[in-house]
Length: 188
Image 1 (cartoon, rainbow, N blue to C red):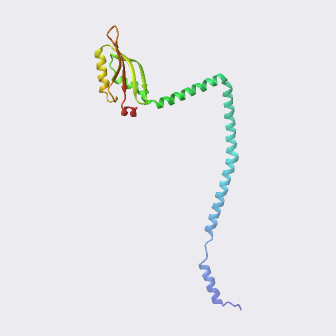
Image 2 (image 1 turned 30 degrees about the vertical axis):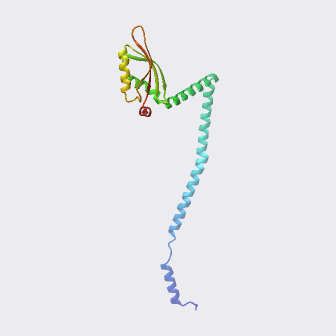
Image 3 (image 1 turned 135 degrees about the horizontal axis):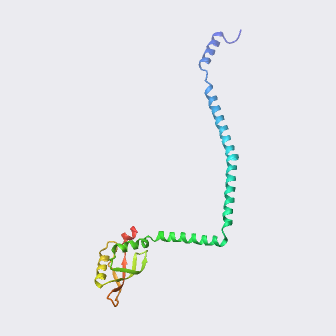
């Protein structure tokens, strides 16, 4: 006979049978992980050898087309295009930083009488000063124009008259100085 009694063996066997661990779930997780790893490896090598080759071929084709286009343009034309592009970029940058000077024409059109015209203007965008030369048909038109500029909210100070003269037809030739208000400078 054995050293362990039969009743004790039966009890131990029944307890082990009840506490048996289910081993199916860890195997399923392991199998899914192996499948996912294999799929990742397959995608990696597909991109590495398939897509990389496609991109290299496409890049070589584009390089060849660029070289063909470059050979069509002469050196002189190329320099002209570079100079034109540079001028356009510089002009765009200058116009971006001088919004006030661009919108000044619209502002002057709004407040200028039909009987008055300006033929010369010097505009300082930094401080909003406009030094303008113009002509008015009569002295009355000139004075009325000054009062319109003085009443305009876009101008900070009274209009300063720098020079005034009359021609043979009694038309007024003048130089005035206008200063835009800070609010106008901020808006423009």
